[in-house]
Length: 447
Image (tube, rainbow, N blue to C red; front, side, top):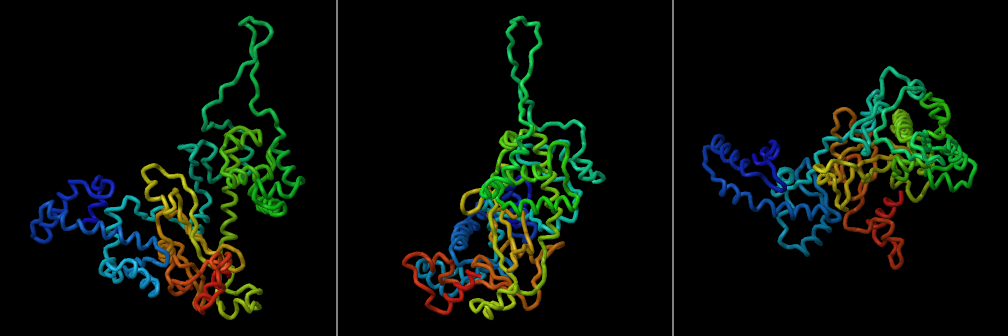
C-alpha cells in the first residue's frame, strides 16, 4: 500500500513520503481492514524498513551477490555467504526470501534513484522504423528544421536541399574592419568566419594518405575500415557526395564527434563549415548507420567458430557456447530531475547497456536505455521478458557471463568466491589456478 502511495504524483519527497501520503494510507487502512492506525503509528511500524534497505543495498554492492527479482531473494555462493556472515554475524536473516520479498517496494519508496527501465529499448525494436526523427542532442533542446526528417523524402533529396536552414545557435556577431577613410558613410566589410573551404577535404586526405596512426587516433578506425564503411554507405544509396562535401567528409564529421565527444564548435573549426551544416550531416550519417544496424546486429547462426573446436584449451569444456554477455555504462545526458536514477555506483550519470557478442565477434543483441543505477541482472530479466524483441537462447546453447548475472538456463557464470579476472592470475605475485574452480574461472574469463 505504501508503495502505491509513491506512485501517486506529489506524494513522494526525497527518500520518503509527504505528510498527505500518510493521511491517504491512514484512510485506506480504515476502508480496507477496518483498523484505525494513526500517522505516528504507521511511521513507527515502517521505521525499521529503511535500515533494512540500507543493508540490502550494501550486500548487492558486494562482489559475489546478486538479486533475483522473480524469486525475490539474493543469489550468492555458499562459500561467499559464509565468509560474509563471519564479518557480519547479525545479517543471517537476509539469506532467505522473507526479508527480500518487499525489496522492490522499499527501493521505490525510500530510494530516489530507483531504476525503472521505462526508456529501455532493444536495437532491433527501433531499427526497422527508419522514418522516426532522431532525438535532439543535448546542445539543443528543440530539433532544428533540418533534423525533422520527412518520411517521403530520400537521403539524396535531403542532402541536395538548398532551402535555408534555421540555426539552433545564436547568430555569431561579425567584426567590421575599419578602412583608412574615417568617414562613417563608408560601407564596412565583414570577415568570413569559415574561410578555408578545403579544410574538410584536406582533413580526409590526411586520414587516407597520411600516417596510418592518424586515422586510428582521430577516427578510431584503421584506413581500410574507414573506407569500407564509406563504400557500404555509398553502395546502399544512404549517402552521396553533395556539392563541396564528400561522403568521406560527412562520415569523418560523425566519427570525430562521437569518438572524441567533440562539440559542434570544435568540429566547425576542423571542417570549416557552419554549425547547422555540421549538425545536418552528423544526423544524416548517424541515421544511415542505424539503418545498417539491423543487418549487422543479429544472430548469425548457432555454430561455433572454427577455431574453438580445435582449441584444447576451450573444447570440449565450452562446447555449445555462443558468445558472451556483459553490461557497459555509457555516459548519458539527462534532465537534472532524473540524474539520481541514472547515477551509477561509480558516481557518474550513465545508461546500463547490455550487449551480447558472439564468438564470431558480432553483436547478437543489444538492450539500451536502462538507468545507470540498475543492476546487470535486472537488465537481463527485462531483455528475456521483452514484449516485442525478447532475448532468446536456442535450446542446448548458452552464453557466458560474469558474476553480476544469475546462473540460469542459457547462461554460464563463473564460480563465486574464487579468483576470476585475468588480472588476479597475471599480476606479479599472483598464483596460477590451483583448484578446479579456479581453473574453470581462468578459462571462462579468457574465452
